[in-house]
Length: 121
Image (tube, rainbow, N blue to C red):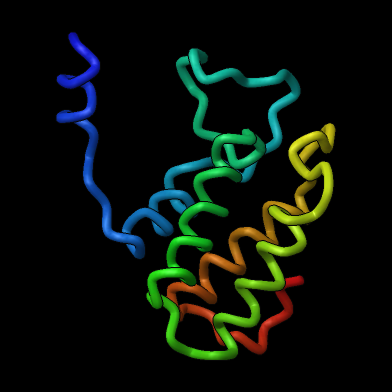
């Protein structure tokens, strides 16, 4: 299969669909061993690529005006500032259960499934 063929078989998601996919199709479990992308069961929220996908979705959503509620925008900016713009986040050794809970909550807030007043940071 060529790279073009691979790209053509990838599913296309809307932003809300992709946020739900990240929240619902990846495990909150923290595995004992490091899980690499070539592992047959690699859908864990502890993986850095999962975080990169979430942060990219949130940043693009902000930039493109997908989140119109100012309170939601503020919560998303606070989250991305803490996790993405914070020095050395991607050098941080381990993702904690608290990090995963905060990520799930910000997805809920972004989707309008949880009020922006809910504690996210």
